[in-house]
Length: 127
Image (cartoon, rainbow, N blue to C red; front, side, top):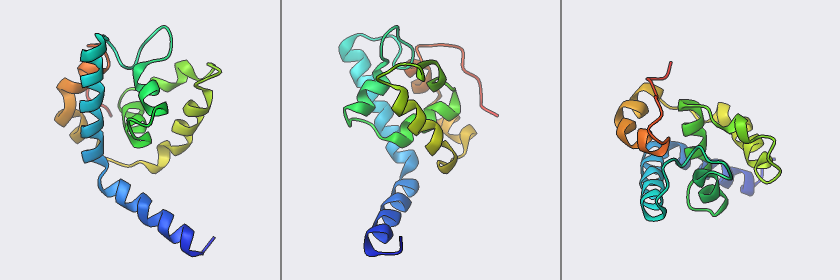
């Protein structure tokens, strides 16, 4: 547990936490580009597998982005019974306590893009 590998893993995790908001912003841009390209109205809500989860499975966006979106407006629970997505839903819910950020700041900074990603559903400032 206290070998070089664990120390290196911890350093990578700290770096991700420090770059969290930058990575979320970059990932939102990727999602919006893909939505426009594929003519998708919502990256979160879909009858099948939503774009945001497909992009995560394809390695196009970070786990932290999923967790940030889940904390701002929960959506993962509706996919937890899906055979393909259940492991991702469990991963997001288990990782959720470790991702800390100012919800109001992120929401205000990315309000317009979040509305597009969520498909223009009514979203309000998180508590």
